[in-house]
Structure formats: C-alpha cells, structure tokens
Image (tube, rainbow, N blue to C red; front, side, top):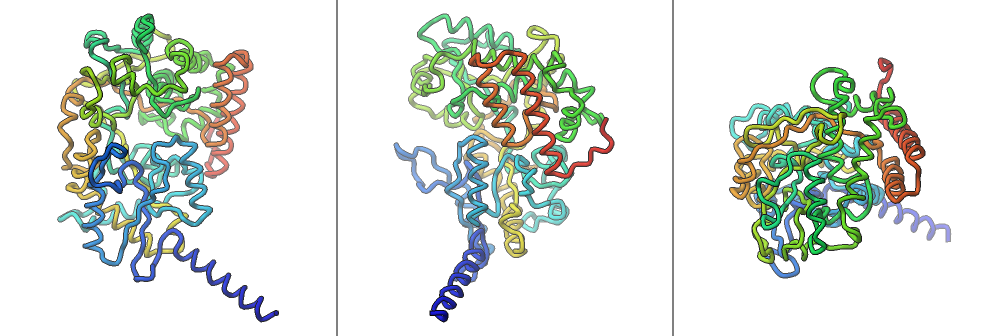
Length: 491
C-alpha cells in the first residue's frame, strides 16, 4: 500500500512539473519553443473568408506568423484565443488573473500599455531597445525605428521609468470619435466644444424619433470609465490645474505626479470647486443626453436606418463603417470635443493643429509578461524576436493597411487611404494630463459604483464628494505601497 501511494505521489509530482514546464510556453514534444501571444483585436481570425456569422477577416498577422516561423523554425506561435477581446478593463483584468493562476499566461500580451504595472506584470524592455533589430537591415538600435516621443508616453514607459511597452499601431489622432449622420447634422453644426455638443444633442432629442447620442456599444452601465470622461471632461479640467500637477515642468502630468497631487489634495472634490465640476459634467452626460433605456438598447439597427445622430465609436470602426452596406446615409466623424469657458471657468483655451493629429498615441501596445517568461530565458528571447519581427516596417504596414483605421508605430510604415479625409482636418491638441480615478482596479470599481448610485439619486452631493476622496486616497495609498514609490520629497 505504501509503495502504491509513493508511486502515485511521484506520478502526480511529475504531471505537475510537466504542467508548469509547458503552461505558458517552453519546449514542446517536437523541441520547438511555443510562444503564446495575445494581440487582442489583431489576432488572426479562424475564418479566411468573410461570412454572415463572421464578417471580419484578419490575415495580416497570420502571414507575419508564417513568415516568422519560417525564419525561426525553432519557435511556434500560438494565439491566446480565450482573451475577451472587446471586453472592458475589469473583464480583461480578471482574465489575466485567471490565466496566471492557471499557468497559461501569454508570453506577449496586450493590456493597454501599463495598465497593470502595479502587479509587476511587465518585463523591462530597455536593454532590448538598445540592441539592433536584426530583421531590419542597417538598424543599430531597435528604438531608432520609433518616434522619440513615444518613449515618454505613460503607456510605453512605466512609473519607474522602465520601457515596458512595444507600440505596434497608433491611434489616427484621438482614440475615439463621434460618427454622425450627415442628413441630421451639417458640417457647420459640428460641435467645437463640450457645450456645443450638449446643446446640439438636446436639440436633436426634441424629435422623439431620433436618438441624439448613442454610447459605445460596450458601455452598458453608469460609470466614470467612459470616453466622455477620458477624452472630454478629464483632460479639460485637469489642464486647469496643470501648473500645479506638472511638478517637473515637462508639460506632462505623469502618474507619479497625479499621485503626488492626489496626496496634496488637488483632486479632492470636498475642498476644490473645480474637482466638483468634473463629476457634475460627467453626470450631465447620463442625465441630460442619453435616452431612457440606453443600457439595454442595441443602437446599431437605429444607426443603420438613420435614426441616430451621433454614435460614439473607436477609430478602429472607421474602415468597417465605410464598408457597412446596411447604412442608408452618408456619415462623417469628428474628434471628441474638449470643454472651454462656455461650460466652466475651470478649464483652459482649446488649441488646434493646422491639419492632422498631434503626436498620436499608442493603440496596440504589447508587453512581455513576467509571469510567463520568469525562469525561462529562451522563452523571453523568443518573445523579443517576435516583437522585433512584428515591428519591421513592411509588417506594420501590412497590419494597419488591413485594419484600416490606425497608423503604424514605426517610421516608414504606410496606412490605409480610407484615413485620408479624417487626417485632413484640424484636431484639438489635448493636454498631456487627465483626471485620475482611483489608480487600481479594486478602488476604481468602488468609485464607479458610487458614481452610478449618485447619478441615480442615492447619495447627496456632499456625501458623494466625501466618499470620492476617501476612495481615491485609498487607491493612491495602495498604488504607492504596491510599487514602493518614494514619497520623501512630497509636501
């Protein structure tokens, strides 16, 4: 009996060890390194031809995979198809937690650049950026393929100053836009600021047959995690206090500076009237602009039939929208408007480019994941190779020309001509600052629930503002603790 138990124990240990060895990558039975890769919405589709059920076809990354594997026969790419592509941050966050717990974490993954840096997920890529990209002839440093400003963005450089992100594509200006029905809105009516947007929406809503504003289809609850907050309200009011929050005067309010300002009380709505204004304007969106029943409404059929005036969407939808045969009207797209003095005194003057976007930010940014490659230098080396291969200008061009709505992140890459009209317009120059929520997922969830309850009338203003500050302070403290941030020079 003891021998049988000993044999079973030995077998279990062997199976467990084998599972650990092959979980996130490593040598397989054929001797190849299996590289599990998550490229979010750019992973190749299983279907190679469009169908009614699956109209989207992505072939570029499949061709890149095949070319890479031909050049590197010792490496096999596997795609992380269980990823909830299109899911909101909370869902993606839980997916990573589950994959890591199950020892099935991708070696390369997309997580909005540095979203989970407090969890120590990301490999520092700085030394690799200083090496040549062997797949680009004459390249001396991999970093030379990218515009310098990208390495100063908070989605590529983490709070410790490490370069952890690898940009693949860039937003073609703002990440999102308002798609509008040209039968309902003329070019002269396109709003140039938030107040004009609100006024236009209210006027359009007077017609009961028309929905003035349709939110992005994945926004199905009252929350501060929305694009109105991120691209209109947040940067507008944050710019009002940027002289105070940009401590090192580099024209960027970094995450560390946001934390410092949070601990100094600069974002406290209990004591700061401009901070109150942030939440008042965010509340207006839900109480004044959206139609009753918006949470359960699929606005796509209404948009296609001409019953929606303005539809909030990502720029990634531009190419599919041009090919939308169900749409019965012409459409245009305008950038998210900022706030100015027509709404509140707590903002700054809006500045515009003459033409085209100003320093477009990273869209698809990939990381090498520590939980996948720790104690496996061969797997990490394979991940670096694949990222270098991806960023060959011809490969980036293949991706963005097929995707249609993004720019390439490397110099010399081309883009789809469907963007020509969009890029030909003037764009607001969005300040390099924003309004922080609560810094980590747990406190963000609490803040969003609180905001939803306040919008529905379950809290007084004073009680709401008091709890906002409590939650934000708790989130800041946790973030500072988890990343071991030195606060000794803070006042």
